[in-house]
Image (tube, rainbow, N blue to C red; front, side):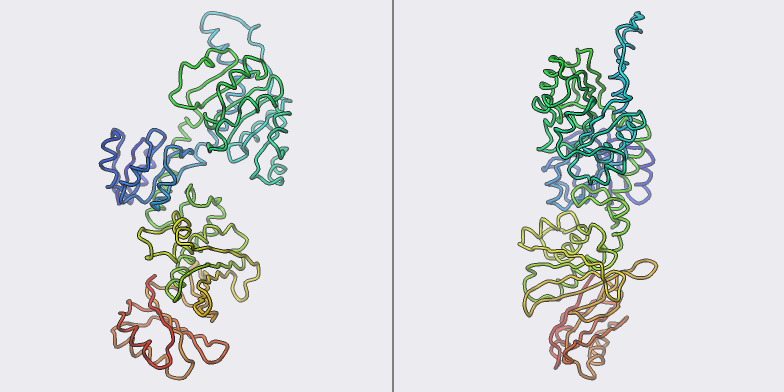
Length: 526
């Protein structure tokens, strides 16, 4: 596989990629050459200078993953990548510490007029009186957006003796309490309390211009504002007006609506501190971003679990580690169910029982859909585009969770079809390698490890049936690795599962199903 590293990342990240892939460094590649050659690559790594448009993504016939060495993915058309089934992965944790530290550095510079005093002194002036500052100690910090970076900022602010108030609708009250932070239900509550406000929201249509004239009017007079997140989060004209009126006592900005960004009137103010998007610019953060992104790309190209994909449900690393063995299991269950159902899929029901049910299982639901649709769509299906492809086909998925799991530690059951065509298959993982096992078909229990080639039959429960199938399979030159049988509760039907060393031909399956007593059967390639 070929990987294009379009922008500079850490050498350690490039070395990691070269262990398994052919790597081309395209640092000097212009837009025209990228458009001409992007179809040659299975993966591309970028930073912030390269924009991947729908047209570029459409031309990338082989592309499986886009790696963004950093947090933001504004320069990647996520819907276009998702439609094509291309994973978009970033390195969200790589620059968190750097961004949090820079936020506090700007706050300190703002409160103590550090850059202004520096410029005055190197200009030949010893002017202590003009640069009397304020302390962070005892002040109230308002954190808008309490994700990874917001929480790191809060921890550091607490160490300065600040009180911290935070607003984030997606953070539980318990999390705020654990960190010694006061969580508020409405951002207006934060505005009314904070002496210093820092914003750490993603850029979305809802967050653009978050801090505008109306927001500033609700803030404490003399409030200071820091932005190390996204330039579009603050309306610069509104901020300028706030500074001129004195409602805003000062601002520190590391990011801007367009970049590079120079020459704005706000730069001329003594109560403003600016830096040229340095939040992630530490050697440690750059190294982490390159290595983390290279690891994500490697996982995507080798069938591993991508922990930082932005176009599949976000799952924290601990949960991802717990769910990883169940992703291939769910894909296999989806393939088995699709191979057995006679009618349309219709509604897909997935039941999680036991320990696995205590996790966020959305990723596993996507894995079931990917297995169900595998080989049945005009484009390759994976965890990225499975939900969209299912929605286009009118397939609904319903998930339920139950702590009790019967005879198994964990059990996942997939049910598809309607009426007489309804099919239910279950599975679990077992052994030191947590290998996927088939645990039930048509509600009959087994314990068979999944193999690349399998055959499943439903037939009349009477003597000689297993031998009959074995004879036909053997005559076709195929070895049976293992066999398991379960009798249905009515005593009339039984279910047989075979693992094989080769796929049976259509003629072989047709011969078995034409025999007296065989009602249903499918050969499966997993």
